[in-house]
Image 1 (cartoon, rainbow, N blue to C red):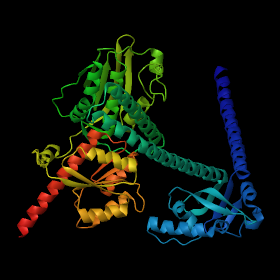
Image 2: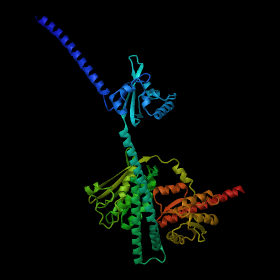
Image 3: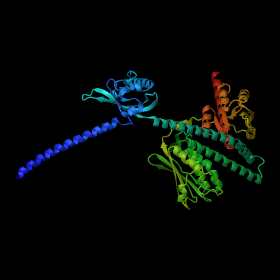
Length: 571
């Protein structure tokens, strides 16, 4: 009895399994049919199927809605290429011909060529509706194959791309508008910088003359001149920082990332900063670097960053405090440069507000002047050079500001090149030869300032010209040893005048130094690239001005010596 009952149960199980499988198959077919029906009746996608010759065999509801045709109007009548822009179909055939090295005929073949060879193909084309209107579409093409792999037709699934195209156009227009606004802002700042620097040149230039002139100013005059120069240099610092910040934010600041000797930069910064520290009674210490490390950065901007950090460490230090510069390797391939001070330190809240524009962390009422921009510019410069910057601080102990820059290899032939630099010394005897200096400038105050500066040089005789054309003629007539050239001149610009002189064999050897209030980095780079020997920005710093004249004279003397040697060899 038990065996018989067990046998019937097995038969029942087999029967139940078959019934279940049939039900599952039926459900699957219903689902497949529902899915197929949903796809074919979708109003959001155009679905077009063709035979192997490209004649439309299926035209779904979405295609009817998008294109305005009924299925009866197109099935067995036209090809999909007939409802695409013909110029785009021709262009696609040409592009495929160049891409695949096979001549592709315009028409349906151009639409399906890649898909028919098993390559995925999605492209953008313009659909032409029954009423003649057009809209952009994204089309995907898939070949339809039989059980033997032969192509029996093609399936084209398309979607309206009008919204995305409209957004792209609007975005491009917005980007163009933003670009124009950035250019306008940069041009405005450049113009503003020029206009502010021109009067500042007179203010600071004549103040330096009075301060260092003979007879020496009285103590009361000295205090007044010091206040003039202090306010003038502070205003110049503000102009520079606002200009830098604007250029960085607009993406127009250009950097030249190259191997920079860490030892050389620190030595230059030390020479610039120690006199300021001595005035305030701040002790300075710099690391001794025995191994020549190089960081990949912009040399000028690295100095700018370090000078700013050092000035802040001195400015906000305790009386008779100390500032220490430290260098440490930071794995895997970076160098950390730290500036440690013995100031009053920062609270946690103040540290969180670092690197915010125009935020002086409560120092607004202090006697120390500042703009609240320097650290913002410093941070963004470091990041643009591929580095990082940060700060640690403890109230009552002091602060450490640090930056990390990537290490790099030393430049090729760096040491050998130094061995071949010409050593030119100006004569030191009492009977100095007098050289002619031509200054091309139309601003009377600038002319008078340079006249008084050059009057202190027994080795220079100054002649002036008020515009570029006269400057060119004076250069050809007087053959000066060196030329100072303003950029914005009446008639022709200083750059055009310089190019004329460089093109003339008689004057091509004369070093021409730009002396201009155009101080935007791109203007300076453009001037150097154009061929100026050097570029001095206004307001003039007297020491830098004199050193540049000395360099120009040394170059001129070297050129004269080479010319004389060439003449002797020829004779």
